[in-house]
Image 1 (tube, rainbow, N blue to C red):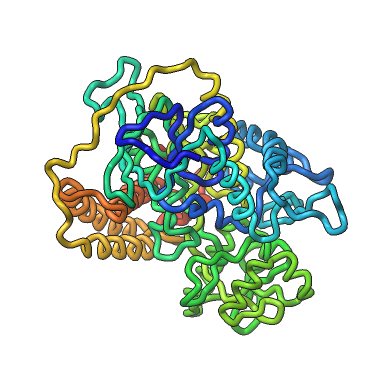
Image 2 (cartoon, helix red, strand yellow):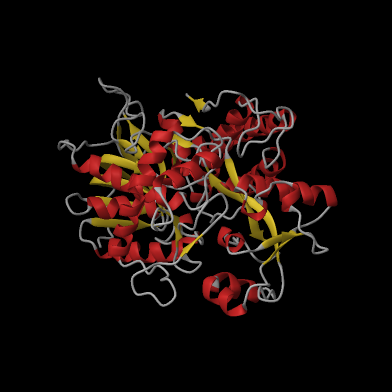
Length: 533
């Protein structure tokens, strides 16, 4: 693995982000291309490594592509692109076989040397989620990252933060055939300098934007960077109002962002009030196995109605050995906080989990800009619609990572372009960085209060007003001071929050993950919310 980069460096493909989508793409390209992967933390710090449940794919005789497609369309509440959904589902088994060939240690069926254990999660009609105990994301990411680190054609740049894409418009010589992407300006955090990285193709694979909310299951890296950069560069953005709130995040003052997997409910976990009574059947006949948006709203309703700090997820009726085998990470993590899941219910609350919208792409990850792709949670492909079906996210990363790689490999060779270096001749070091931390805290709090699980027009207007003020402060700060990682993340979060609020204000109905008290009904026609600059 190469580790050095000059102030201007050239790659065949620059991948911004090191999650499953980015590493899948990198490993497929590296057979014939020189690839650069930048990640703003360590290689394993992204959200993919936090995924517990697994990857949904048709892998058993009891299952079928039609059943997986049907479950995805139902969860998506009328907004899934059916052709894209079919494409992803039908390519799912091949993607899983590729992971197995890479050495991912998926959990075997008990006593079997060839079969894999499949679990069932909310919204799925059969067991189809392949997993590595309850640490699937970590197992996948560790396997792929080891291969990426050792590959001679992959340069991994850790602790590097993308600032902005370099486009024809930014260079002030718009291309004859439309706006084009030439690479990115990237902050080298350890060195404190900005590098200019040129690439024949650039890929946004930075994940979602969960950190725009006060409570989230996402890691600190999930600040909407790719979505914001693509938007500023001129890409369309779609369906940003659909933010998935995971129903069950561990409620404990010291348990930062710890997710209690969907698979716990899939294996028989029951949601209960403090007195031990169940409540999900009052909200949906599928009870604990209803899609995430329904379960999250039900928990939110019960908590607000009864003034509760949390509800409880109880799987203590299952044998202790079963729980320790299937949920070793959850078992040990809860035990650290004095909760024995074999004997006690788990206190849980909903938390922001997944961004269903993003940069508009086609079937192979292409965006509105030539030479620019977006894959994974950063992208809007049409797969998730108004609500993502559990464990379809890692599947999407795999399928579109492979599809984008195929397209890039088959492109004719393009000449490298010399780019202007980053200009910071007219800026100084920041005098009071406390402004950034205060603005970050304010943003996350009002987004949670005004643009959360249940919304109103008045709440959205309040959020929009505050976002406008933050925009003005941050743009002034950005123009006058040298960039820092915290400033760049805050800038991207505010842009992303603005896109979420704009989209929510345009949707005059309640559909999927977007629930409005002012527009509680479902419109007869399902339409995407598409924003253009």
